[in-house]
Image 1 (tube, rainbow, N blue to C red):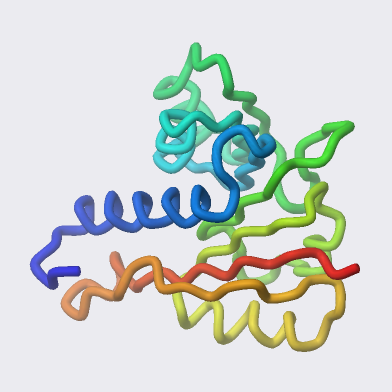
Image 2: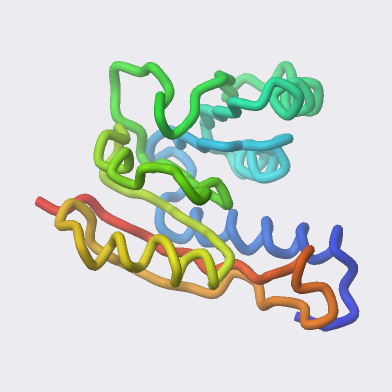
Length: 174
């Protein structure tokens, strides 16, 4: 990735890489995706265009309104205000749950065990992954690490806006 990218270009490349990563492991038609912390729908839109059915959950009312305004009318889109502490109310399991830049300090990672899926895509800045998720993974037995991949390198001149993104694919143990 070129260091001359501006933050919006960086974000677009990061989201494109994330959508491609999901597609490589769960092609469209292999089960609905739940995207917890969907924000304004930038990744959601990419997934819908690729042919996925997406349950986009965004607890922040302002972001949820922007997501709805941006993607309203899409046939394969379900929208809710759910968050990690209260995942989408469904009676079936999702093909995968996506937690893309949504795990924040203070969240109880044990909540991951209750997610209605056997496949979990997590993407975080490398420092957050190393400081938060990796220690939890090594201490629990419910999830197995399938893959770790760099989705975007940090931009040295813009580390605050572009800290990099690393993806961790987890499969439920047992």
